[in-house]
Amino acid sequence: MTALDAVREVARELEAAGVPSPRVDAEHLVAHALGATRTGLYVSNGGLSAEAAERLRGLVARRRAREPLAYVLGEWGFRRLTLAVDRRALVPRPETEVVVERCLEALAGLGRPRVLDVGVGSGAIALALVDEHPGVSVVAVDRSRGALALARENLERLEGGDRFAGRVDLVHGDLLAGVAGPFDLVVSNPPYVPAAEYDALQPEIRLYEPYDAVVGEGVWERVAAAARPALRAGGRLVLECGDGQAGVVAAGLQALGYDDVLTTPDLAGRERVVEGTRP
Image (cartoon, rainbow, N blue to C red; front, side):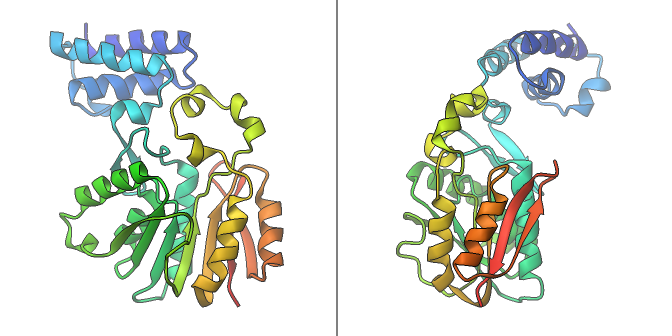
């Protein structure tokens, strides 16, 4: 069986299991089993070895059970980084890349800004900021020790480059408790799915991703209230929110005394990021 034969067969299996993007996922899985790239599948006429076929069967079984593709592969791309991912933290998503864009915009022109990342998870936001802003330092907090361990693993993967050394401080804690400001920017992708909507989520989220990182109501408000005194005057708060929640979050920031409140859509056109400035 050639690699492309395997892609077609795996895609049929995944489609039958209800996987939303069977062909793309099949390419990822076959490439991973072969230690190749997705594009490499289309330039090679070689067949799968017995070992590769066995690896592929195990990967496909996991994806057919609706385990997220990123968890099956063990890593996932986020902006310029490739991060280790597993069930200790959420899979980094494209909409969160927009959060990073807004943070970088707020930090433009600052030589050595200090940032607080509330709910660091896999480390996606914190590490992307350090990767893309040459002077930023980040205090990254999470109440999940498992998530913090995963973020540390990702930091260690990247610390071969001098630009990461000593610039990320990982802290165990709940929201901003025990963290001392002032900060130039506070950023958070808090849990924002209402509990009543949890059972309707796709299996990849409901069966595998950490519940406490998904479900939460009013967490953004707690973050915003605690962030205001932790920000320097003129410092910026940047929050990710759920689809349809931006209006409420924006009004909430204004009620808490933030200025220059604005919302930004994600790549699908949904208002996803809300931000404001401490006067």
